[in-house]
Length: 89
Image (cartoon, rainbow, N blue to C red; front, side):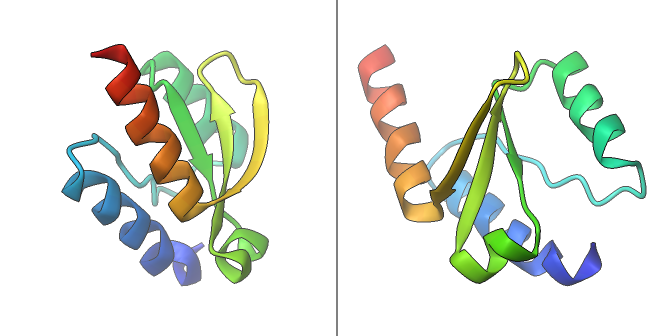
């Protein structure tokens, strides 16, 4: 939805500023199509955002395997990404 685009872009921008690759899918595709496209494109994580997430300043996380990890505050998610990156290196 267009009203959530600004929030999504702010999350994407924060991730980019820290060196992570992220995209925002603002297409008119259905939710299931967007999830499937992200799986085919092999994104490691998908961040799902709706009204609840915007109100809570959070994201809902899905893995490439379509496992729903649940809702997490944006700052906590970013900290988790940094930790994963640092432990990988």
